Length: 341
Image (cartoon, rainbow, N blue to C red; front, side, top):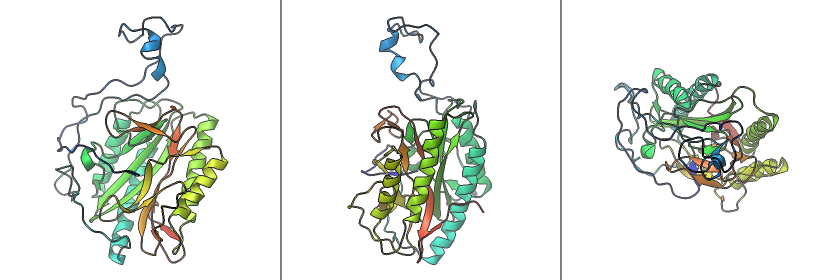
């Protein structure tokens, strides 16, 4: 999960221990119109409105599905401070971490990488993002970890699942993945008092060449951002490397959401923009821990928000991809923590 470049606000809530089959709310996911339907015909959905005034503009785009209530966690899992309230407690935390914190982060980050791999392996046409969330939820618990996103400012699920034009913070729901989709899975594990955060974009069945090129470039952008990490250099070097590569390939770089410091708290300083700005002037030092998680778009980098207050999509409906690692700055560069063993 990434942080906004501006301040984030979201209503808090308390956990409801309910099975995934519990009652859900929200509109159904996208549907295909009948063959031959014309603009001025009544819409296929039964609304009574003309097709062009109703569903035509949304077809081919991801629409919200029904979201089940939050799942509980067993008592033996040590939760975050916001587990019940939805409100994280803010406290001073140094950007440069102690060896003890870094050692604990290595374990939490490895767990996050394992959960990401397990949930990603389940991606296939017909699988719902709710099912991916259930797989991830159990995988966290099996490793003794708490899903960091669960009830973070009221977020209701263990992972974020962002499909096609969804930039980030897609909430798992009952929408089946379709052949040709791409889906980002964002995983953060809380274990032994620290967080580890990573994500990746996965292909759903037979994906077109243009989407594959987007995904490949996004992975390269993340890796180039990591390669730009050097002690004594400003964080703006990271965004410069990412933006230069993305623009050379004809892609946009999302600006609203950025990488972030991480450790005993989920989101802390420094902010890590994925585009160049001289305002990102924090000097990198050995022991700093933060995420690099560029969101790269086929079209515009501008976003709009769904009514749920979490999910951001591209304003032009074109696809976007993302990859993320948590790292620690070393004397020579960067040590990536969110790698599978």
